[in-house]
Length: 561
Image (cartoon, rainbow, N blue to C red):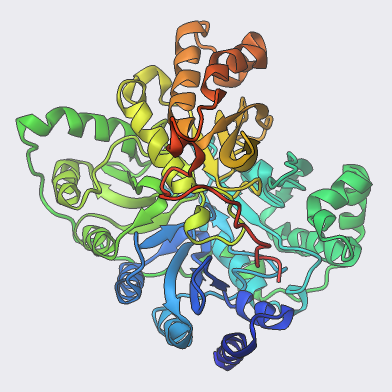
């Protein structure tokens, strides 16, 4: 695909500044301006279904090495990749080289179907209905190329899941597609109208069972109804969830069922979707290797938290934890080499981790030792210590606070004791730099988003703390209290400790919040809101990674262009 329009947009911006037109051209190719870095850009890479090859990973690593951006490549909560710190003159070269590697940035922005998300364990999960990976890849490709549905009222996010665990948050997605069986017949439960952002909505069931052969017509009908009936005047109410709120699920269901099937869908997608080709992966494998005595406990903890025994006998899927979603080029090279030596394939996840599948169980000790020197053998992937965060104020135009610094502070506070408690591993913490919920802070036990509050006449960075949400779509978190950024680590630690000390047997965190009440949590955290004078504690008036006093510098984001 030609990069000339992108080059022209960047040229115009360098001479006279961005316009709506130049933003639209860039963003639809996944190119975004960086915060406080004029002339430099971020490129968002689409990873359909989270499936990525070793060669592609190495290509991304090389580009990241050239940009020199610290701290490297960012894994997004949509299982994509972001490369930042790219000079405007180099953007098109990056796009071309990504395309040569078989990667695309097309429609990672704009009002179209964004990259389709898939459960990273689909195809290997012992209790799954069936593998949905081929369907996710087929849907992604079809709507990436379907030019008539690339300028809808707002973006559409689609997620596929196949197993009992919540790996894609389908109920908080515009279109959530869950694999189900009716007897021996395979099909999908379809959920619509979910979404997060400043006003979260839990999705509603559109169809209890859609046969495999009807999946594409159903998705197409949903998109066409939305394209025709969605709000194009008020951007704040343009997402699919608002059309559902206005119409109700019954009216929307009737409209979808009555929508003529446009088609034609390619035969390979409509009837032979399971044969859709997956990117090639190698499987070489290596022998077992003993873990030294001083590492035995760490290996045991890693095995318990990061390893899933696959339904394929003798094989395991390993979640490689990527703290805060940031991975260096050198670490990407190690992951690629590990996949060549030990596994049968790689997947990115919305938990901002990388899953290595097809590892021989007897090779797990050797894999652990291979990953260890690169800092990639950290335990607790997808657990309490694995704090999810958005990119934050280091790069994002919309961010108010540094979510990365907050995530690091929270992790440090939990690591001292609670983070390794086996009875607390089910808890999830997510932090965003603004209310937009890119970390999915509404859909977890403890969620936080950045805000600014006046204290002693000064702007002070804070986080709104939410409690009792559920990624499975049962509920969203309730706002409890606003905590100064400088004290966010202790606030989360005290909240988790309160739950540990006062919960009933087998009581989930949302159930605890309901029983104990929001006021009990607020009472526990209230002392952390007391403000010192600037003279006594100047750090209180700064963001966690800042050397100067805080001021709000957020701007309107570019994702909708």
